Amino acid sequence: MGMIDHRFDIVDKATFRNGMSRLGAAVSVVTTKSGGKRYGFTASAVCSVSDTPATLLVCINRASSCFPAFERPRHFCVNTLMPNQEDISNVFGGKTPVSDRFAHGDWREGITGIPVLANASVSFECEFTNAVDEATHRILFGRVIDIRENEEQATLLYCMRRYLSA
Image (cartoon, rainbow, N blue to C red):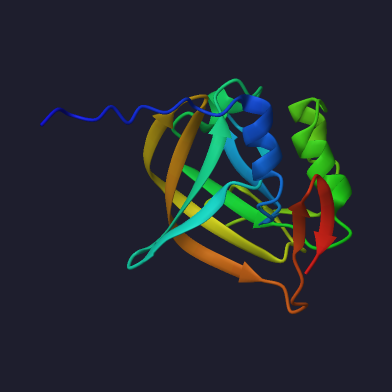
C-alpha cells in the first residue's frame, strides 16, 4: 500500500490577511525601556499562555522600527486600550517616530520603570522569559509581575479593519 501525498498549497498573503481581519482582538500598546529610552508598538496578537505562573505572549514584527528594543527586553508591559484611545493605537502603530509616541496618552512608570498607560483598560507588566522566531515575527513570552485594571470595564477592539468598543 503506497503513501498518499497530502501536500497542500499555502494560502496567499492577501487571502490570509482578509481571513484574519475577521478575527477580532483587543488592541494593546506594548512598551519597554532600552538604553534609558522608551519604546512601544501597537499589537493585537496578545494571548494568555498560562495562569500558573501567570504568563502571556505578544508578537512583534522583526522588521518593526522598535524591534531592537524588544529583541530580548528585560521587562515589557502590555497596555490594553480603552474605547476612545484609537489615537494612541494609531500613533504607536504608524510611522510616528518612536521618540514622539509617548506624547500621546498619560504614561507613568511601572514597578520595573517601564512605561505603563495610566488609563488603560488593563496593563500587564511582565518579566521577559523567552522568545521564539516564526516567519516574520518574534513571539515574546512574559511572566506577569503586576496587573493594573481600570474601574471602567471597557476595551478597544479591532475587527474587519475598524475599531469597535466592548
